Amino acid sequence: MLDSLKEAGKHISREISRTWEHLSEGWRELLNRSNNALTHFTHSKEEQTQTPALASFPCWSLLAGEVEETEKEVVVRVEVPGMEKEDCRITLDGNMLHLSGEKRFAHETHDSSYHLMERAYGAFQRSIPLPLNVDTDKAEASYKNGVLTVRLPKIGGKPAKSITVS
Image 1 (tube, one colour):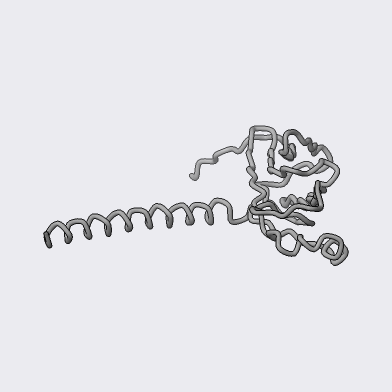
Image 2 (cartoon, rainbow, N blue to C red):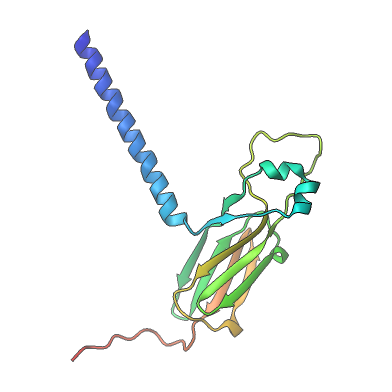
């Protein structure tokens, strides 16, 4: 009986260790891959006065993005669900793309209470480094299905060239 209890204890300990390792691995990946996507949302004093519930809502959210380089351009895509394209502002400064805007809280009913709130609202800013300088005069932005896409033509348009050292 004692041996079977010891075996059960060892098995439970292994399973807890395995579960903890998976959980730790998930958190490490989230932090490594999404570190810059974690975005702070702020509320004005007026908004907090008009909607007191905002004080209990999250102030941090993920604005997940990607930067893709093709032969001719750099393409930046950022997920900004729940926003209108008019609420997004893009500024290019050298090899940095600055995205700012506001995600507005719309309360459909005033006699309800929330049991789950994971969405952040308010003004935000996010800076995304670009792999190289781009032609800001020819940049284009579009918005579809909650994804903001910015197309940035490369300067010069010539592909990289390898040079042999002699």
